[in-house]
Image 1: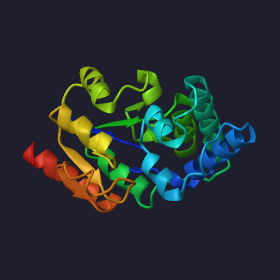
Image 2: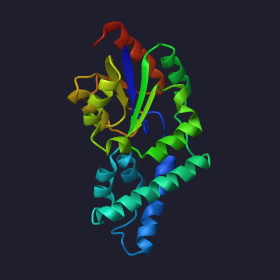
Image 3: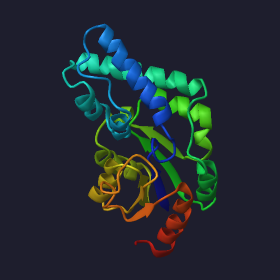
Image 4: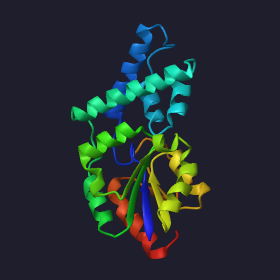
Amino acid sequence: MVNLLFDYDGTLHDSLAIYAPAVWAAYDALAVRGLAEGEPPSLEAIRRWIGMAPSEMWEQFQPQLSSQEKQAGGTYIGRRMQELVEAGRARLYPGVPQVLDELKALGVGMLLLSNCPVSYLRAHTACFGLERWFDGLYCGEEFHYLPKYEILPILQARWPGEFLVIGDREQDVEMARKNQAPAVGCLYGYGSREELAGATWLAKTPEEIPGLVREFLCTGRP
């Protein structure tokens, strides 16, 4: 059995449209209380935070805050993003539903792992019906936000067979490399070509992914 392990934000979901407004709202809320330092983060800075574990993001955003304030801020951002999802602001990349349909028809295992809270994944599952494609939906909060490369062995124990990682950030490539799994790096997402340099294959669009998966299924290895 071959299991495809997808990242979510930046790989399937174009998350900047809901993430940036939520981060700016969190900054404003902190500023009102006199807790924010510096200027509001730029759109480019926020792009780089997509896919990071919350601890990494807050170290770049407002590192001076206490752990309690960071946790509360993360909850605030998550709640605001969820409100935007429920308001219809969330969008999968164009072509993603059709790509997932095509991959599901191949008879492979379909799994998703995102560095996100449980509530976030539940909101998106309800919005897009993710359960129609995925056999397993997992988020970082379930694993106490361990690095992704430490979560993969847990999933490998639950889902026998080979794994092919599909994601847009260096954390996804690192997860694959440290567990001797191949990876598809998604250039259309939020990671740079440099951070995806270690991927086995590179996809410029979602529509390229099924062809790369078929190549893996035919060869077993690149």
